Amino acid sequence: MEGTGFLWGPVERDLSNALDAASLRQRVIAHNLANVETPRYRRFDVVFEEALAAQQAREARIKVKLTRTHPAHLSGAPVQVVTPSVERDTTSIVRNDRSNVDVDREMAALAKNSLFYRSLTRVMGSRLMALRTAITEGRR
Image (tube, rainbow, N blue to C red; front, side, top):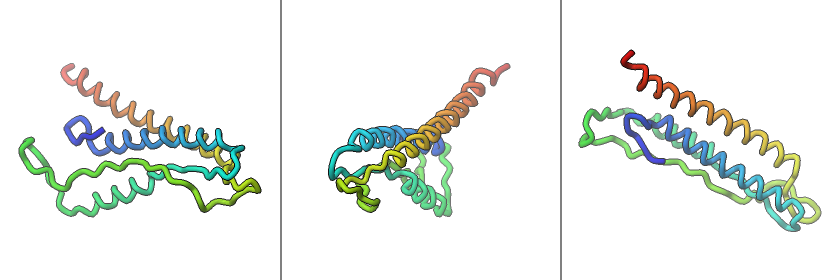
């Protein structure tokens, strides 16, 4: 979701992208687990956090931040949306059947990703609740 407007800022953009990455990671881990007995199968992994950190570092280096008070004003540096990517893991240890899927490792990654997703949804929910409170309680 692209958006830099008043209600959807860079924090919500990054949260939305992180939720997309966690969802993709869930599917990739499930795919790896489904192929645990497939000879010569090489596991896949989702790369997102490193790209997001690099993007945030690039945005922090911008010394002059422009504030837009009108839609016709220039917005400054273009907003880069970080998207998760799927890469094949060719570096991990290979079993006798030449597959590199470790069930324990995948299950640990699944649990970690589940906690990550749950924490993201809580943060996003609290931000939306604060926005709702501001809209509905502002005139009381």
